Structure formats: structure tokens, C-alpha cells
Amino acid sequence: MKFLLDVISANLELIPITIIYAVIGMLLALLAYQIIDWITPGRLSKRISEEGNVALGVVVGALMLGICIIIAAAIAG
Image (cartoon, rainbow, N blue to C red; front, side, top):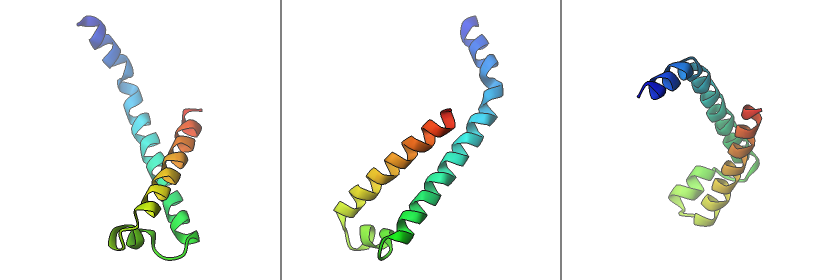
């Protein structure tokens, strides 16, 4: 139990930095989605939700996953 408390207390100073990096990563992913939406014809959210275009949803999901992996690798250093 003492080991667990030592690990938690040693890592408490890293929590704000982790939150900052998480927010930066989410903002970059949102920016990437907006850029993808801007360069494709039509609104992606409308085509996916209202028109039910599953294939477009899969493609956008794959693009976002790839972008998020790149962002995570860049943040991790």
C-alpha cells in the first residue's frame, strides 16, 4: 500500500501537464477534422448523420484515427 501511495504522490505533479497535452491534442484533432471538412465537397456531418453515408463515416474515422496517432507520437516526443 505504501508503494502505491509513493507512486501516486510522485506523479501528482504530472497531472496538469498531462491535461494540457490532452487538450492540445484534442484541439489539433478538431482542427484536422475542420480542414478535412473544408477540403471535401459538402458538409461531412450532414452527409454522415442525415444522409446515412456509412462509407464516408468509416473513411473520416480512419483519417481521424491516423491523425490522432500522429499527434500522440508528436506530443510523446
